[in-house]
Length: 400
Ligand code: UDP
Image 1 (cartoon, rainbow, N blue to C red):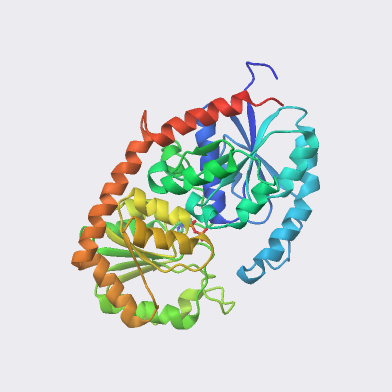
Image 2 (tube, rainbow, N blue to C red):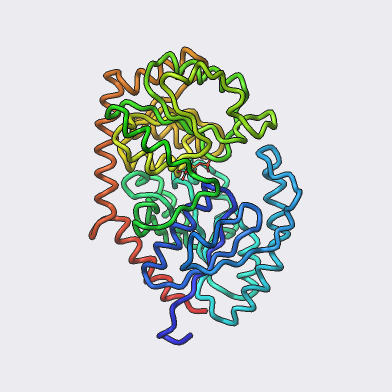
């Protein structure tokens, strides 16, 4: 490869919001460091190429049209996607005629490794969770013993948040680690939206009218589903707490197959204090001075976004790494409270504790301290800043 030519990095995201966002953010971070970026993506949940004009987009033939990609069938969908995407990915990479300097892929997109091995191209894995979550998978160590995880790893995490797990995993895995998160703070500030759904920005002017630290922001992310009874108990608890609330009820939130969850909500429970939207500009909402607490499913992106703004959390984890994140929020970082049950009383009590109780004040104080710690990791001499420079040198050093 000519030394004057930009080094070309191909990124392959897993096609769900909580994975697409960090991969596109990583693309922006690397683009700002002088790499040329191509995104190879499934047609299912395709990112919008016009939002990221600096990247090249390659749609993969996933053949998922009409396939059940709902929450309950997700493991089957992953396996079908891995099988179907392989050949079009290989064709694209071969067509790039030796221009690919490195492929970075979400750990779920296993077909990438098959193709890269065949074409002898270097790869790096992106892990969109904490090191603590990976460490909780004892099985990983068996995979390491079988030499199935020999790859360098980029993490969307921060040394200061994930220090012990990162150190212990590093000892076991013996591969380069690059903890360069939080990606959304490392990415250039004017990076366009990565949302698959349209953001309802009208909630920002509603927030402008609320008192500082008074609003509970409620969102269970892009995938978690709940039953109708829980939705109603949440609504009652929110109304009883007497705090203003901004609630994201995405159309597919209910487990009954309804595609308009908002219609199940008794209107009188939200009229006075609440605003309900289908999808919010979450990072801007969490950064707004009116928001004083985040009722969350504790997905890793949401957790990082909340920590970065010093907002304490009311935790209602649902699956996968959300359980570990909730445990860290409540027991290690002590900036959150986990709800044991989601009934009217527990929701009301949880909200009051975090928003107006003494325990909540202490959580807020710690959350602000953590925000400052994370900010220090981003500037010259900070851990994420230094890791990013190491990653850039590492990619440049890869031989194709
Ligand atoms: N998000 C958003 N608007 C919403 C709800 C969520 O922009 O109304 C974004 C949020 O900022 C985060 C992502 O969706 O970046 C959700 O990712 P997370 O890892 O928290 O959870 P997942 O959706 O993967 O379960």
